[in-house]
Length: 298
Image 1 (cartoon, rainbow, N blue to C red):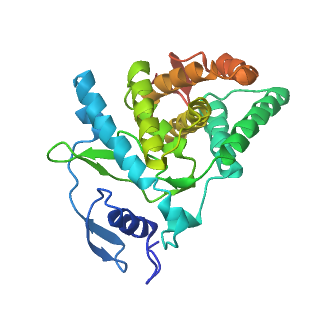
Image 2 (cartoon, rainbow, N blue to C red):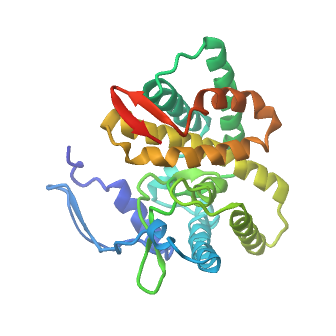
């Protein structure tokens, strides 16, 4: 159905907010609410994920530094102190929303794609750990969150600058959410060394902006816990693409996303039971799984 007349689309609403802040987003040339289409600026054909192919370590680091600079501008705490009409500040991540995303993973990856039969005791154990993760994330300070800030939603413009797409679902959330999406990206693997250097860069910028030292150990703990939640949600999305739309193009990204998970679980001994349960069911990957008589290669 077409949008209601005189009702501003979330995309347009958030786009205006980001433009005012100097964030590089496409220019809107025309919106026809009667016909239901937007006429937007051509924002290049090259995603960051494509541009990164074959680039040197220093080139990758320089481009990701630009991506972090844009992220920091989006996360400006000033927005929370002033009245804003941006819809992103009227909706927020909370424990229920985070938990819905993890239930989405359970439903689509474990039940629908892999067709697993999991005992109730194990399901309850998994969900108890999911609740712990989600309630921990909910307690963190909030800022503007793009919600899908990764290498396929960043476009490389002329002069090797970056532009931002797919921001219509933005909301309030913890700052580590977009950072985890960017640095532990299913579509492009940066490697541990570069991830740590970029984390250091982000933290250094925050300390300068806030003019006070941060508890880096706690920040990193929440960053890696956020990455666990974010990557589980991504695996659920990739599975959903297959079971709901018969689109197997995303399945190849599942093994790498699981590698992030296993690495990050090691940082949280209290989540060992959850990791052991998930690994028991997911260690069939990579491999070949029959789903509805369709052979899927991971």
